[in-house]
Structures are given as C-alpha cells and as structure tokens.
Image (cartoon, rainbow, N blue to C red; front, side, top):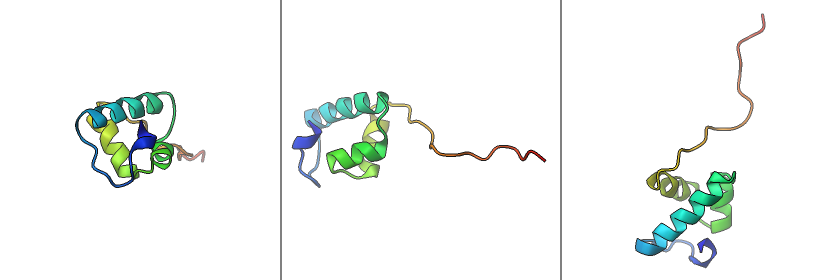
Length: 71
C-alpha cells in the first residue's frame, strides 16, 4: 500500500485508513518511525502523525541513557 503512494500527495479517506493500518502493524512489529518514513518516501512527522491518529502508543527514544553517577 505505502509503496503505491506518490511522494507529496495528500492521503485521505480509505487510503489513509489502509496506510495507517499497515504502518501500525509494521511499527508494532518493531520497525522504527525513521525506517517507515524511508520505506514510504514520507517524512518522519507524517508517519508520527498517522501513528498517533491511529492510537498507537509510541515507543520511547532509544540509545544510551545516563544513569546515576557511581560516585
């Protein structure tokens, strides 16, 4: 579904619902927002908005976190 959309086109109605379901499934299985954005040709913000609209609980940021100092 996502691959058939042209970059920059407005996504509404049934197409938006199908895209949201597809992205929701892929995000839930572990893909990152950045990976979804790259594979669909859409922006990070667009993917974030679609996932938020569809009720997905977004994961926290990854990477190393700073713990308490061991002094």
